[in-house]
Image 1 (cartoon, helix red, strand yellow):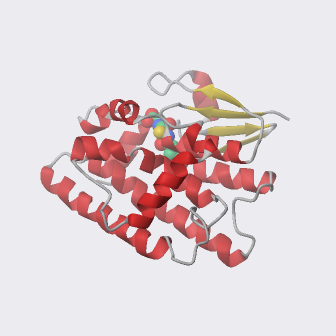
Image 2 (tube, rainbow, N blue to C red; image 1 turned 90 degrees about the vertical axis):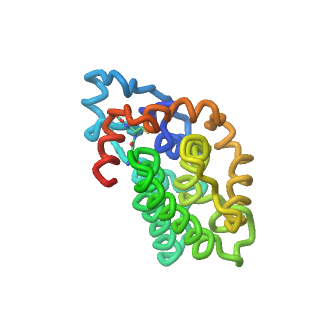
Length: 230
Ligand SMILES: N[C@@H](CCC(=O)N[C@@H](CS)C(=O)NCC(=O)O)C(=O)O
Protein backbone atom coordinates (compact mmCIF):
# COMPACT_ATOMS: atom_id res chain seq x y z
CA UNK A 1 0.00 0.00 0.00
CA UNK A 2 1.39 3.40 -0.87
CA UNK A 3 0.75 6.64 0.96
CA UNK A 4 0.47 9.94 -0.89
CA UNK A 5 0.16 13.38 0.68
CA UNK A 6 -1.36 15.98 -1.59
CA UNK A 7 0.16 19.10 -0.21
CA UNK A 8 1.47 22.61 -0.74
CA UNK A 9 4.88 23.62 0.54
CA UNK A 10 3.44 26.88 1.81
CA UNK A 11 0.55 25.39 3.80
CA UNK A 12 0.61 25.19 7.62
CA UNK A 13 -2.19 22.62 7.68
CA UNK A 14 -0.31 20.39 5.24
CA UNK A 15 2.78 20.80 7.43
CA UNK A 16 0.81 19.25 10.31
CA UNK A 17 0.21 16.08 8.32
CA UNK A 18 3.68 16.05 6.77
CA UNK A 19 5.12 16.18 10.31
CA UNK A 20 2.76 13.41 11.44
CA UNK A 21 3.90 11.11 8.62
CA UNK A 22 7.53 11.81 9.59
CA UNK A 23 6.85 11.24 13.29
CA UNK A 24 5.21 7.90 12.44
CA UNK A 25 8.24 6.95 10.35
CA UNK A 26 6.04 6.12 7.36
CA UNK A 27 7.13 6.04 3.75
CA UNK A 28 5.11 8.39 1.61
CA UNK A 29 5.18 10.51 -1.48
CA UNK A 30 4.25 14.16 -1.68
CA UNK A 31 2.33 15.64 -4.57
CA UNK A 32 2.27 19.42 -4.77
CA UNK A 33 -1.13 20.96 -5.58
CA UNK A 34 -1.01 24.30 -7.40
CA UNK A 35 -3.41 26.35 -5.26
CA UNK A 36 -3.37 29.38 -7.58
CA UNK A 37 -4.32 27.31 -10.61
CA UNK A 38 -6.06 24.19 -9.36
CA UNK A 39 -6.09 21.43 -11.96
CA UNK A 40 -9.07 19.11 -12.40
CA UNK A 41 -7.27 16.19 -10.68
CA UNK A 42 -7.03 18.38 -7.58
CA UNK A 43 -10.76 19.11 -7.52
CA UNK A 44 -11.41 15.40 -8.03
CA UNK A 45 -9.47 14.42 -4.88
CA UNK A 46 -10.14 17.44 -2.63
CA UNK A 47 -13.82 18.03 -1.83
CA UNK A 48 -13.07 21.38 -0.11
CA UNK A 49 -10.55 22.37 -2.84
CA UNK A 50 -7.85 22.55 -0.15
CA UNK A 51 -4.67 20.76 0.85
CA UNK A 52 -3.81 18.53 2.57
CA UNK A 53 -5.42 15.33 1.31
CA UNK A 54 -4.03 11.94 2.25
CA UNK A 55 -4.38 8.86 0.09
CA UNK A 56 -3.54 5.54 1.67
CA UNK A 57 -4.35 2.73 -0.72
CA UNK A 58 -8.10 3.01 -1.30
CA UNK A 59 -8.60 5.37 1.63
CA UNK A 60 -8.80 9.09 1.04
CA UNK A 61 -8.90 11.55 3.96
CA UNK A 62 -8.92 15.33 4.08
CA UNK A 63 -8.77 17.99 6.84
CA UNK A 64 -5.36 18.00 8.51
CA UNK A 65 -6.50 17.18 12.07
CA UNK A 66 -8.62 14.29 10.76
CA UNK A 67 -5.74 13.05 8.59
CA UNK A 68 -3.53 13.00 11.68
CA UNK A 69 -6.17 11.11 13.68
CA UNK A 70 -6.47 8.65 10.79
CA UNK A 71 -2.70 8.11 10.83
CA UNK A 72 -2.83 7.59 14.60
CA UNK A 73 -5.59 4.97 14.21
CA UNK A 74 -4.09 3.21 11.22
CA UNK A 75 -0.44 3.27 12.33
CA UNK A 76 -0.44 3.00 16.12
CA UNK A 77 3.31 3.27 16.79
CA UNK A 78 4.74 5.55 17.94
CA UNK A 79 1.65 6.71 19.76
CA UNK A 80 0.82 10.39 19.35
CA UNK A 81 -2.23 10.44 21.62
CA UNK A 82 -2.43 9.46 25.30
CA UNK A 83 -3.80 5.99 26.01
CA UNK A 84 -6.55 6.95 28.44
CA UNK A 85 -9.94 8.15 27.13
CA UNK A 86 -9.62 11.22 29.36
CA UNK A 87 -6.18 12.05 27.98
CA UNK A 88 -7.38 11.58 24.40
CA UNK A 89 -10.38 13.81 25.04
CA UNK A 90 -8.07 16.46 26.50
CA UNK A 91 -5.86 16.30 23.40
CA UNK A 92 -8.88 16.68 21.12
CA UNK A 93 -10.19 19.64 23.11
CA UNK A 94 -6.91 21.51 22.56
CA UNK A 95 -6.82 20.56 18.90
CA UNK A 96 -10.33 21.97 18.61
CA UNK A 97 -9.30 25.12 20.50
CA UNK A 98 -6.44 25.56 18.06
CA UNK A 99 -8.62 25.07 14.99
CA UNK A 100 -11.66 27.02 16.15
CA UNK A 101 -10.02 29.86 18.06
CA UNK A 102 -6.26 30.37 17.68
CA UNK A 103 -5.88 29.67 13.98
CA UNK A 104 -8.99 31.52 12.87
CA UNK A 105 -8.10 34.58 14.95
CA UNK A 106 -4.64 34.64 13.40
CA UNK A 107 -6.10 34.65 9.89
CA UNK A 108 -8.79 37.17 10.80
CA UNK A 109 -6.34 39.67 12.27
CA UNK A 110 -4.34 39.49 9.06
CA UNK A 111 -7.39 39.82 6.82
CA UNK A 112 -9.37 42.47 8.75
CA UNK A 113 -9.58 45.71 6.82
CA UNK A 114 -10.04 48.36 9.52
CA UNK A 115 -7.59 49.33 12.25
CA UNK A 116 -10.37 49.14 14.82
CA UNK A 117 -11.25 45.53 13.93
CA UNK A 118 -7.57 44.57 13.83
CA UNK A 119 -7.16 45.98 17.35
CA UNK A 120 -10.16 43.98 18.62
CA UNK A 121 -8.87 40.80 17.02
CA UNK A 122 -5.33 41.40 18.30
CA UNK A 123 -6.79 41.59 21.82
CA UNK A 124 -8.78 38.40 21.20
CA UNK A 125 -5.60 36.65 20.05
CA UNK A 126 -3.67 37.87 23.07
CA UNK A 127 -6.41 36.52 25.37
CA UNK A 128 -6.33 33.16 23.59
CA UNK A 129 -2.54 32.95 23.88
CA UNK A 130 -2.71 33.74 27.60
CA UNK A 131 -5.42 31.09 28.01
CA UNK A 132 -3.19 28.54 26.24
CA UNK A 133 -0.27 29.51 28.49
CA UNK A 134 -2.29 29.24 31.70
CA UNK A 135 -4.62 26.31 31.05
CA UNK A 136 -2.66 24.34 28.44
CA UNK A 137 0.99 24.34 29.43
CA UNK A 138 0.54 22.90 32.89
CA UNK A 139 3.47 22.84 35.35
CA UNK A 140 3.31 19.08 35.93
CA UNK A 141 4.70 18.22 32.46
CA UNK A 142 7.95 16.24 32.58
CA UNK A 143 9.34 17.31 29.22
CA UNK A 144 9.27 20.00 26.55
CA UNK A 145 6.12 18.92 24.66
CA UNK A 146 2.41 19.36 25.28
CA UNK A 147 2.06 16.16 27.29
CA UNK A 148 5.67 16.17 28.51
CA UNK A 149 8.38 13.88 27.21
CA UNK A 150 6.59 12.56 24.12
CA UNK A 151 5.36 14.59 21.20
CA UNK A 152 1.63 14.38 20.46
CA UNK A 153 -0.98 15.33 17.90
CA UNK A 154 -1.56 18.51 19.94
CA UNK A 155 2.02 19.64 19.28
CA UNK A 156 1.70 18.83 15.58
CA UNK A 157 -1.57 20.72 15.30
CA UNK A 158 -0.35 23.82 17.11
CA UNK A 159 3.15 24.24 15.76
CA UNK A 160 2.80 25.30 12.09
CA UNK A 161 0.80 28.45 12.76
CA UNK A 162 3.28 29.47 15.46
CA UNK A 163 6.09 29.07 12.92
CA UNK A 164 4.15 31.68 10.94
CA UNK A 165 3.67 34.12 13.83
CA UNK A 166 6.42 36.20 12.18
CA UNK A 167 3.78 37.14 9.57
CA UNK A 168 1.63 38.77 12.26
CA UNK A 169 4.69 40.48 13.71
CA UNK A 170 5.71 41.82 10.30
CA UNK A 171 2.34 42.99 8.97
CA UNK A 172 0.39 43.74 12.16
CA UNK A 173 3.08 44.44 14.76
CA UNK A 174 1.92 41.60 17.02
CA UNK A 175 4.12 39.67 19.43
CA UNK A 176 3.59 36.67 21.64
CA UNK A 177 3.13 38.26 25.09
CA UNK A 178 6.20 38.11 27.36
CA UNK A 179 4.02 36.49 30.01
CA UNK A 180 3.70 33.41 27.75
CA UNK A 181 7.09 31.99 28.71
CA UNK A 182 5.99 28.34 28.62
CA UNK A 183 4.57 28.82 25.14
CA UNK A 184 7.83 30.42 24.00
CA UNK A 185 9.90 27.57 25.49
CA UNK A 186 7.63 25.06 23.73
CA UNK A 187 8.13 26.82 20.36
CA UNK A 188 11.90 26.74 20.89
CA UNK A 189 11.77 23.00 21.68
CA UNK A 190 9.58 22.30 18.67
CA UNK A 191 11.98 24.11 16.35
CA UNK A 192 14.63 21.49 17.17
CA UNK A 193 12.38 18.52 16.45
CA UNK A 194 13.54 16.67 13.31
CA UNK A 195 10.01 16.66 11.81
CA UNK A 196 9.99 20.46 12.14
CA UNK A 197 13.54 20.87 10.82
CA UNK A 198 12.55 18.80 7.77
CA UNK A 199 9.40 20.83 7.02
CA UNK A 200 10.10 24.36 8.26
CA UNK A 201 10.67 27.57 6.33
CA UNK A 202 12.29 30.80 7.43
CA UNK A 203 10.53 34.05 8.30
CA UNK A 204 11.13 35.68 4.91
CA UNK A 205 9.47 32.77 3.15
CA UNK A 206 6.34 33.04 5.30
CA UNK A 207 6.20 36.85 5.16
CA UNK A 208 6.31 36.69 1.39
CA UNK A 209 3.76 33.85 1.24
CA UNK A 210 1.17 35.82 3.24
CA UNK A 211 1.59 39.19 1.52
CA UNK A 212 -1.71 38.87 -0.32
CA UNK A 213 -3.55 38.12 2.94
CA UNK A 214 -2.07 41.22 4.51
CA UNK A 215 -2.79 43.54 1.58
CA UNK A 216 -6.31 42.21 1.06
CA UNK A 217 -5.83 40.68 -2.38
CA UNK A 218 -5.89 36.98 -1.37
CA UNK A 219 -8.81 35.37 -3.16
CA UNK A 220 -8.30 31.62 -2.57
CA UNK A 221 -10.81 29.39 -0.85
CA UNK A 222 -9.16 29.74 2.57
CA UNK A 223 -9.09 33.55 2.48
CA UNK A 224 -12.76 33.62 1.41
CA UNK A 225 -13.76 31.18 4.17
CA UNK A 226 -11.85 33.13 6.82
CA UNK A 227 -13.23 36.50 5.67
CA UNK A 228 -16.75 35.26 6.34
CA UNK A 229 -15.94 35.08 10.06
CA UNK A 230 -14.43 38.55 10.42
N1 LIG B 1 -9.22 23.02 7.73
C1 LIG B 1 -8.34 22.63 6.67
C2 LIG B 1 -7.69 23.89 6.10
C3 LIG B 1 -6.81 23.59 4.89
C4 LIG B 1 -6.46 24.86 4.13
O1 LIG B 1 -7.04 25.93 4.36
N2 LIG B 1 -5.49 24.74 3.20
C5 LIG B 1 -5.17 25.86 2.35
C6 LIG B 1 -3.69 26.05 2.13
S1 LIG B 1 -2.88 26.53 3.61
C7 LIG B 1 -5.75 25.60 0.97
O2 LIG B 1 -5.56 24.55 0.41
N3 LIG B 1 -6.43 26.61 0.45
C8 LIG B 1 -6.96 26.59 -0.89
C9 LIG B 1 -7.21 27.98 -1.36
O3 LIG B 1 -6.98 28.93 -0.61
O4 LIG B 1 -7.68 28.12 -2.50
C10 LIG B 1 -7.33 21.62 7.17
O5 LIG B 1 -7.07 21.62 8.38
O6 LIG B 1 -6.81 20.81 6.39
